[in-house]
Every structure is written in structure tokens, then in C-alpha cells.
Length: 630
Image 1: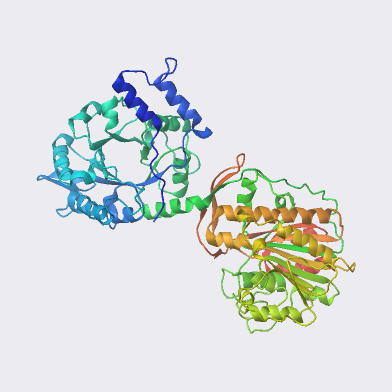
Image 2 (image 1 turned 45 degrees about the vertical axis):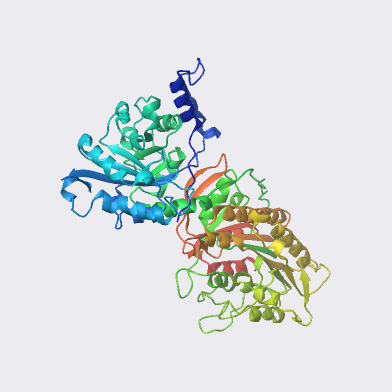
């Protein structure tokens, strides 16, 4: 169930009632009520009002497959029913021709709500911090209908009486209803829907449950992009705020973009005919929104050696696991509109399909980059028959190159493994690690596999050093395991270990003045996509981008270096809903918690970077790398 924020009523409602009752002024003599509305409207963006307060309203709820229950269990805190009076009974229907004898207000809403209230220990929801309102839309002759409504609701005592019971379900009348001066003719526990242009005294305000307006009276917005006439919308919302009331537009469009724009304008009740979809949107919103406090510096490359047709002798292949185009864009916006990787001029697009499925996993996606051939999902650099496929690292090692891989994830996970191992099943971690001993690779660095953490008598491999956290610059072939503090997410305090280990790896591989190949993986962009966590994604991408900055600096000093930045696949189905790059605010929508078949970027900088322009299969990266070293 979606967790929505609790009620926060504006202090001005209390002051307004007190002032009216006491006969005193609400504001200073120099400040009229209208001026107060203006102040509230133009100060909304300055933090004086809590813009993040919102909740769902189930419009025309009786059309749901399960009236009341669908919206209730989707966490909607406002539910609407249209009501007619027929033969002394309150009937729920959109219009008269839809009336059916069994669909009474009592049967569809009042009795089930009473049962739920009692089941929850005398609160509307099991979460006692949440409240519920039932909006009764009277379709005809409110003067005849309201006395019947008062009688039917009143029979349940304090369950629907917020005056006596702070946990009560609030009943609010909309549609056919009296003007504010007539509210006092009904019990104080019965509330009414207000309008923007109505005038309220203290008594009528006390019986006003919310302010509603038809969106068409303010804009002919189609739900796409930004609504026009935003000042008028904000002024209407500001009036409700100043009265301590929550605002609702009806006649709104029902889509994530429309919901987001309504929230942006400070509208509390988000109108929907799709409560389950709105539940998902609101439930994800805390993880789908992020604002970076301070942008990080961006390195400006010199381009002195970029795209020169010169033999490549040093390759830095930087892989952002799960980093699709939208993840790059989200991080770009959060960082004020610029990243280190977006300074690169040569850009390509990689298609990531596996051999046996269009949606690839990291094993097949990484293997395609590493070997130049499509493989099945879950396969580590082996073909469909299980035959080993040489990786670009192995091919270059045979030519005398020094090679290594780095990851801020498990060092035997798919992306690092495809460069030094061959296995039909990616989960065979122990076998994968053992194959490093037989490979020509000089070092691997990353997290320790789970099975090894439980192994107390592991002896390692002959002739291979096993180290913690730091590469032995004077040593030979080695495995370096990062401790847990270097594997936690950046948002939880991981230091810049990817950058440090890449630079240490470059130093280690450069010792003999031989050409080298180094792959460094930012593994946790993928984890963030699976978790549908935007902050996680952006912080990991920015950390990766800092590593890219150091790679660009190296390439600016080395005419024979090539830097490639790419991804094995996209994760999360990320789309951008809203942003403000000036403030670093980003709002997205995740369509999946798994990999998708979206294009991923290829950024190339340095010698022969021009080879990587265009749109191509991920297998082409292998061949382009080998072309670059000729």
C-alpha cells in the first residue's frame, strides 16, 4: 500500500477562525486577505509551504471493478460516490439510467467502511496516521437528499463525526449543496466542498472540507508538458492554502505527467480514475525524485589528441552497468546540465540484444562487448555450444599487452568475469574465480564472492597474491578484494574507490612500459535500476563520471590512449518526467525493475575515437577496439 504523508493543516485557518470569532483583524492593517493570498502564491517555491504534501482521490469510484476496496487498498485517502435519492434510499450511480436496486450508498460504502474502521481498531486505515474522507456528489435536489444522508450517516455515531472523534472518517458533500451561509443548517460533523470564489465566515469555514475547481476553468491543458495559465492555478491553490484547506482539481488528465504537474503546482488531492496506477506512481515517488545539493566540477578536455588516426597502445574501457541514456540524462540534469562524459564529442549507440533473447543480462551483454559475438543470457564468454570465446583482453594479452579488470561489485560477477573466464552459467562463481589463475590477465580487483566469505580454509592459487583493497605495485599476478566499506552505495558513504583503483591499476599496468588494457566497472548503477531508486542511480553515475574525468585527463596527456565509456544494457526502464537543472531536481518514472532493450551510449575519446561513431550491435565494440590497436 502506498505510504502518503499525513495531514498538515495551514496555521492560517486557525487564525482566521479565531480572528473572526473575536472580531479582530487576521493580518496587519496594511495587509489585506487578498494580499495574503498573493504572498502565499508567490512564496510557495521558497519553502514557506510544504509542496510535497499530496494524496490520492478516487474519482467516480463506483465505476471501479470493486467499488471502495480498489481505492482503499491502493491507499487513496479520498473516495467519491455520486448519489441519487430514489424511494427514500440513497442510490450510487453516475446518472439516473445506471441506478440499480442493490447499489445503495449504505451497501457500497457506509457499511464496508464501518467494518474496516472497526477491524483497524477504530481508525480508517491500519496505519493510524492516515485519514479518510468520503466525498458524496449529490446529483439532484440536495434539499430533499441531505436530510436522508444525515440520517443514514448519523446512525453510525462517532465513526463519521470528526468533531467528537479525531480518527473519524470525514463525509464531505459536493455537487448539489448549499452556499456557505447554508452550511450551518446541517450537523457540524457534515462538511461541504468549497469553491475558490466563495466567501467564508468562521462558521462556514469550519464546515468546509476542501476547495475544488474544474480544471477547464483555468486551462485547456491536455495533460502533456506544462499547463498554461500557471499563475491563475497557483493563485487558486494559494487561496485554499491560506484558508487551511486542501485543493482538488476535477476534470484532470490521468497520467504520470499530469499527476506530476499537479503536484508541482501544490495541489494536494490528485484526482484519478486509476487508483492502482496512482498508487504505484506515489509509492515510487520518494525513490523517483532527487535533488543534488551541490553540482560536482566538470573537467573540460583539451581534445588535443582526440580522434587522431594514431595506433592505440593503451585502452581504458569504462562500463556503467545498467547505464542507459536516461540514466546519463538524469545525472546530467542533477549536476546542473553537464557531466564529464557529456563533454566527449564522439558518441555512438549500442544495441544490446542477447543471442537467445532481446533483453540481455549482464553476462550476455558483457560477453558481446568482450568477445565480439552474441551469446545466450547467463553465459560467460562461451558460444551456444559451450565453446570458449577469446575476450579482447585475452587477444591483447597474447600480443604482449598487460591487462586487468576492476569492479565495485563482486569480482566474479558477469561484467568483470567475461574478460577473464568462460562459463555456461554465470552463477558458477568459484569456477569463474579459478579461471583467473589460468588466464593471462595480470590482476582483478573487486568484491569478494559470497561463497568465499564463508570459506575459512581457502588456500588461493599458486603464484597469485591475494590482497585486500590495495594493488601491490611491486607484485606480480594478483587478486585484490575490496572490503565492504568500499562496496556500499555512494549514497551510503562509499569513498571514490573506483577512481582510486583505476588510477592504481593504470600505474600497475604501466610498470614495464608495455601497452595495456584496463576495464573498470561501475556495477551499482545496475543495482539502482533494479531497486527503482533514483538517488542511488544518480549518485552512482556521478561517481562513475568522476572516474571518467580522470580517464580523460590521462588521455589528454597520452596521444596513444583510447577511452571508451559504455554500458552492457539499460536497467529500470527509466524515463524523465520532470526536472529543473538549475536546482538539480529530477523526477523520473521507472517502467521496470529489470533490464530493458533500450539503446545504451558509447562515448569515445582519444586516439582513433572516430571508429565508435554510429549505431551498431554491442559486438562491434570488440572489433572496433582491435581495429584501433592495428
